[in-house]
Length: 69
Length: 174
Image 1 (cartoon, one colour):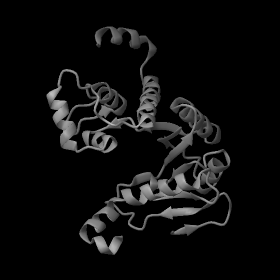
Image 2 (image 1 turned 180 degrees about the horizontal axis):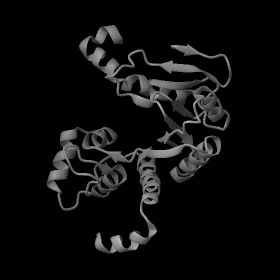
Image 3 (image 1 turned 90 degrees about the horizontal axis):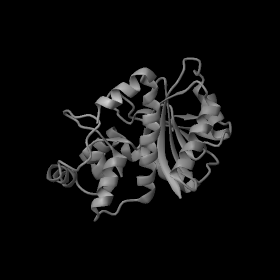
């Protein structure tokens, strides 16, 4: 988490740390993290998808599976 | 049922306060979406919306965004435009498997939207073809939502076609 804001309902923004010129996650590198999402389970899964799809993270994980997971 | 889909928008320059925009979207009922603002001038919402049909889920999402950010222009709804790798991922088989199918059924496999070094299809057409062929466990919600995505993207694209040319061209194209 790079940025946090106190106001409701958006708790903060999740900025993937490897946002550089090679990054292809695009729009969801900065994404809303709701404090009171309509469905917490769905929200968690959606955030998980963003992180899992991060190309840089994938590359790191492939290179050194222990370090990332 | 729950439907997962993404709406991508181009933002107007006046929408520069992205934090406020995200808050407004949350208050407008888009707290069932991830709001992505990682690309300059872009807004992406990945919805997981519960509704009676995919059409109802998408219509209400489009309406929520239009009401909250009237100046945003829809670029694309996903899942619609896909390559073979994307199709394989959705269906849960290997890319090789889908490619073999395509080559074995060149006459009936859906025609691509674009053919080139990376060809593109409408997901709904490929899934419908696979569904008719049988033997694939396709998720109903994905099939339904991809059909709506195709319609939304087509509706958006026809804005580029002058009405006077529409009839003339459709007579020439099959």
